[in-house]
Length: 49
Length: 250
Image (cartoon, rainbow over all chains, first blue to last red):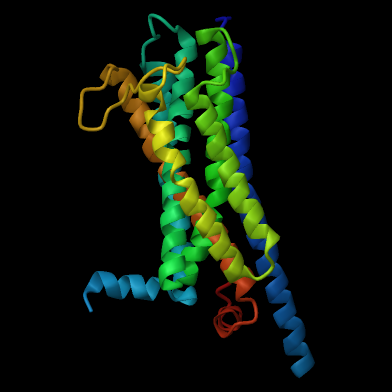
């Protein structure tokens, strides 16, 4: 193995991890928020009926 | 009103922004994926090995775009913050604060990959030289903007305070850029020059530029996702959100 390979692997591994975290967390947060808003609206609708 | 100003005015409407950004995000991700795949293929399988640094130089394909992005996002954050401060455009305020975690992530990636590259190249992970220290200050500025924003409960007051701090921090950007010229640093000088001849062969330079463009699409996609979330959170009791739920478009 090339002596520089571990450095390259750690550099790209940590970068991909941080980029995934920054990309995925807002997507999950958005999904949770939309689900919450939809279910609240459904409860309000049922109450009105 | 000219068509550009009309479009910008329309984008200031939360309902229109929410709809438009929802349409744009998948395209931004798709372009990012294609450019990254091509850039990584070129970086690892086409670009030759550096005669001085060996294989470790390939870290530049993530380090340099991340460092550029960390500075570019800071400028955009400060500009959006200034627009929010001057014209009180709420979408601009939200975009400014949504940029901060993405910029902080890129600043952190630049610091981590730079220090990993430094070990085989300079023989050390870290030195307190001007370029490395000013980049670390940039990372702390991002954390400061995020911390200040979350410390104030009222969202619009929080946005104004964060925008002011972001504007003050802009002074750090020329220090980062010119640090390798103003001081004697361990960090190498400018290799890629805009409008001048770069000190890199095209086989190494092109993948670097492709990765730099790819990260801009990543920023666009994550920024719009974060902005949509904050907008929805702030407007959860407003009419346009109720209308979107009713029309099954949320």
